[in-house]
Length: 307
Image (tube, rainbow, N blue to C red):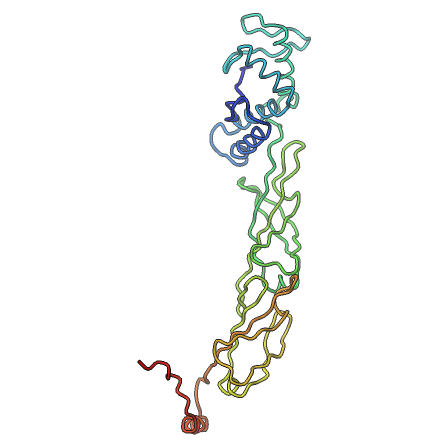
């Protein structure tokens, strides 16, 4: 066996804290995991990273390893495996018995989880991975809640993936994150699986715009409704309701339907932006009325445009 500088493998100083060791391990193991990296030597690199962490994260193993380094062992030195019957190690020169015992402990710790033909398949726990997916949700689903069957592709492996059923909570909006514990990429060995995070993206709607939990609707009204006022039918996600157009309404004026937006605490509102819409064609009778109005009214819509 070749003596390895585990600190070099993890890219940390020999006096690194446990937190630094763990952080370095997680970062490197993610980058070099065989499911992630397709570069040549990724599996060997991942194995070396796992071995380094297995030694350095344990206080006693790290102390024994540091003792060997202090005794003069360095990167590349050959160290033979322990004899099954408890014999000695040899690399061409006798070693102190205390150092040999420390190496025996480290050797057993690093290889206790390997056996037979599986020796090439490192089973040290690798860091779990949280997965993130964008989830398109309709406004109707946000308003009422629901369930969705999703097929998730195996991350970066090209595998067949898996199907899950997701409950869509009532009132989700853009940016809502749904967490499914334990549904991320499985961890190796005894390490738990990561979580699956679904980031909600509300799908565009043919009628409504969304701002938080509020809904915006452009509401066309006829000229006479703007002048005289009216009771008009208005669509909402919960069904059709009646809105009151006040007399003298104008384009751009906003009306609020309290509590008619997306559910929440508190629920959102639905805002109506009025827009006066002219009829596509005016009949002769309508034109006669417009002429009478023009004669009777002193209103000048361009009065404020004079230089």
